[in-house]
Length: 355
Ligand code: COI
Image (tube, rainbow, N blue to C red; front, top):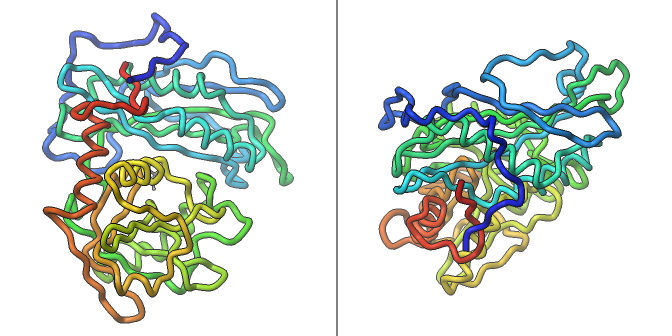
C-alpha cells in the first residue's frame, strides 16, 4: 500500500500544468547537473525549529564568507529520486528514510534539522514544482538533492548560529559513464575513507572531497571507481566512493555491516530486504577482501548508482572477474527494485509515496 503524508502541499506550489516536459534530449542524459525551475529553501536559527520554507527560482545562494559550512564543513547532503509513472504521477521512494538519516547526521554534526514531515513535504513540493524536468517513464528520474548547511557566520570553531535546509533537483539517468555496463573497481590501499568512531556513517559533505584523489587516479588508470578497505586492519571491505558493496556466492549474499564507518544506504537496506524476500540468505558482517577471490557476483548499491554490476575488481595486481548480465542476482534485484520505484511492480511494503 502506498503512503500519503499527513501534510498537504501548499496551494502556492508553482506547477506549470500546460508544460508537460522541459526541452531536454531525454535519451542523452547522464548524471550531470541540469538546473531546473525551482529550489526549496528554509532557514532556522540555532535553538529554534524550522518553520515554513519556500520554493524559490533555482539560482545561487548568498552566504557569508565565514559561514560554518564553507570554513569548517558543517554540512550534510541527501539524495533521492522521483520517478514518473506511466499514468503521469510522481513516485518518491522511502523519503522518510532520508529524513531520518539527515536527523541522525545533524545530531552528529551539531546542527538543527527539519522534522521528518517537513523534509518529506519539502521533497514533494520540490518534485512537483519541477515536474516538467522528471524524465518520461523508462528514461531516468529526477534526482533530488537535499542539503543541510551551517549557513551562519563563525570565526572560531563552533556550530553555526543559523542553518539552511535546501533542496534542488536535476534530471538524471546512469551515474557512471559506463552506463549500465559492468564496473571495474580497484581496491584502494593507500587511502582510507573513514576511521573508527569518525563520521563514515554520516552523510556529511566532508566525507566526499577526500575520496576524489583516489577516484581520479583510478579513473586515469581505466577503472570505474575504488573500493575501500577498513582503516584499522585493511582486511575487510568497506564501500566504494559513492555506493555500498555486496558480494554473492550461491544463495548467500554478504555486505559489510554498518558498524559506524560505512554509509547506511537506503538502497542497501532495501536490497537486503528484497533479496531475503527472494529466498537469499543475506548476511551483514565483516566481509574479508580475500572473499572477493571466491565470489560469483559483486554489485554496488546506492541512490545515484542504483544496483550496478561489478565485472572486475583488481586487488594487489590480481584482477578478479565476476558474472554479470542475464540470470544474475544483481539483475534480479535491480529489476525488482526499479520496478517498485517506477510503479511497474506493486509496492506492498509502503515504500512508495505517490504525488
Ligand atoms: C547518492 O547515491 O544519492 C549519493 O548521495 C552519492 C553521491 C556521491 C552521488
